Amino acid sequence: MNPLLSRLQPYPFARLRELFEGVQPNPAYRPISLGIGEPKHPTPQFIKDALVAALDQPGHDLTGYPPTAGTPELRAACAGWLQRRYGFPVDAATQVLPVNGSREALFSFAQTVIDPTRPAVVVCPNPFYQIYEGAALLAGAEPYYAPSDPKRNFAVDWDSVPEATWAKTQLIFVCSPGNPTGAVMPLSEWEKLFALQDKYGFIIASDECYSEIYFRDEPPLGGLEAAAKLGRTDFRKLVAFTSLSKRSNVPGMRSGFVAGDANILKQFLLYRTYHGSAMSPIVQQASIAAWNDEAHVVDNREQYRRKFAQVEPLLAEVLNVKLPDASFYLWAGVRGSDTDFARELLAQYNVTVLPGSYLAREAGGFNPGAGRVRMALVADTAECLEAAQRIVQFVKKNSP
Image (cartoon, rainbow, N blue to C red; front, side):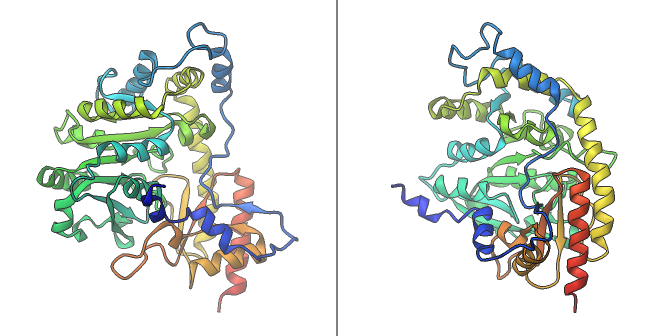
């Protein structure tokens, strides 16, 4: 067996199941889960129709192997969305590559770009999406956890990374909008990262799967957009990852794309050709329909805005929480232990939340997720409101 597998830590949801062993949720309440960030809004009908219609289209049915690079039509749809969303052109043939959702792409990307024959560090935000850590470890690299600063809207403290660590860094994972904090990186922060990149030569993987769920008038800045604004139009050593899962409520389709440095994507395509990561032609056709339509995205965003406008003020009465820049999470500070909070909330009010310490690693003597919980407001408004009301009751009942 690959000895690196032994270095993987249990996934947060496995740890949550262990935490809840022996807990008997209060039967007076029906279960409500805010624990998993899985979209629950209905999938738009036109995407379902496109899936069905593709079964009868010659060349797009199930009788042939799909190309790993995707069809020209799909790459063009992805490039067209980037142009409309961010205002700059990309070459659909060389700077765009379809992937089976951002999760598998983030993992396989690290396997492509890490050179394990020399010292390799992968810098991750902390707290973070655990795929970053697993991808680094299985690529033969060492993760370095750069803490997020709650005093600066959970901005990552890149200045805290030692120079000796930067010198060995081959890859940085950036998550903006962030999971679990919902923070968006401003242009000034991208400028700092690019300056560090120019000095030390690492690659930046920009995870942007929450980019279309936001609460301000101005949409979140993307990594490629930041590069273009700063004159880095070749997107050197930069690749952005995006997905239809949250944008279009189709996590089961496993569809997204990466875009950026053409030289890196050429090597990534080579890796994926051997890895067997081609997207089903049926999914490709439905993805084209999804990327070419924006009305359903606006409607989805408005649903989240209305939901958060009702839920966040309720929770802010009893918890340290505020509206995020983007994403569908609330990153709430609690009194005392975050694991005790989650366990007792389930026992007393049958509501599941995820302890923040499970989404971070202890580094520099502290865990930046401790004392917080992540709440995924993915269900309909009525269910999220009911969960919020129970949480308010729970906090008031258990406050000193």
